Length: 221
Ligand SMILES: [Zn+2]
Ligand SMILES: [Zn+2]
Image (cartoon, rainbow, N blue to C red; front, side, top):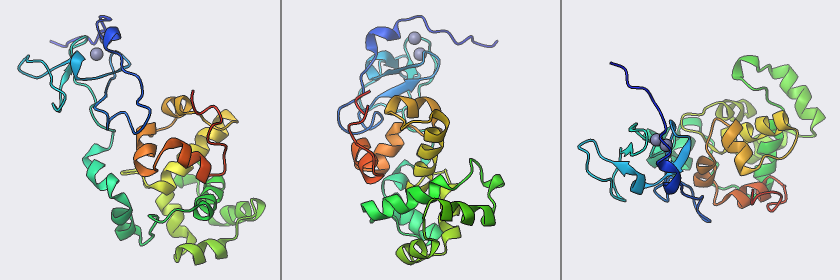
């Protein structure tokens, strides 16, 4: 027997707002994909029917009875994600933990020159694009002490995401919308949650500022 997924609107009264600081998941919020809503433990129960507690993991939505997503999509890697710079650095030999404005804008410059998928990547076209965007490959390689193709690879490694792939995704959404994405835009169009940005960068505003955008531009939704 297959259970039908339906929202009975019980969840509405438990809808939780985005915290002012830090990510949703960090605040204990969970995403019910059936009800398409952010809720917390007050709208949850455990497998045995007991009410979910603040610290419970893996609970079910009281409204639709389906399991909620209590963590970002790639959360097996959440711990890794938090200390991700070391993890990523080990894998790719590029250390992005130091991330000043200059580095952020170099990476953003590279992202602007990349196609949506790695399958469409073409080195000579990429180099032309870099010239067009006035990004010096030599400067980049010098700054990150690594061949630029390693940064390109990093941009397409999304599991777990890293600063480079988060910035590429941000730019792809920006290209699609034709404007700087807001948090809401990003949650709607990006394959990453805003919470993933907020765990990799100190805050959303900080992220925008590093990339050279006005952090208050529409950032408060
Ligand atoms: Zn519901
Ligand atoms: Zn639900």
